[in-house]
View 1 (cartoon, one colour):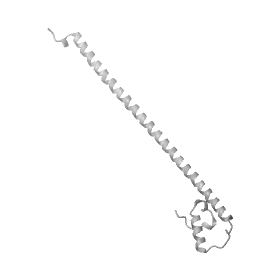
View 2 (view 1 turned 180 degrees about the horizontal axis):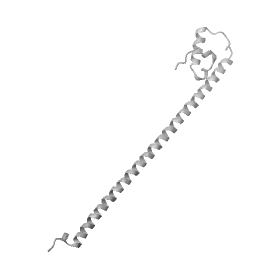
View 3 (view 1 turned 60 degrees about the vertical axis):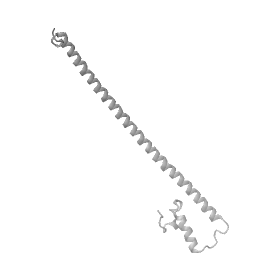
Length: 124
């Protein structure tokens, strides 16, 4: 009895098995490459989304801080107006008390442009 590889049918079956094995390996490699590319695309999209969200958060933080500063400046101006319009507001005050009050006001953003505050260093 002859070995199965010595017959034409046996050789054809062996060749078919080798071709099938190679095709399977090639398909597996292509599937892996596709999965890798898909994962890389998802990662890049996730990173881009995170960067956009981070930028939006930063803009909101700055906007919120500016709104808070504006509200504080408004309150400061309202307090100044109430103090200057109160009875006795024009009465003389001791120089050290006046200077201390002026220094505390000049530390606020609302008074940075006031000519009386130019001579005082910004506390920051």
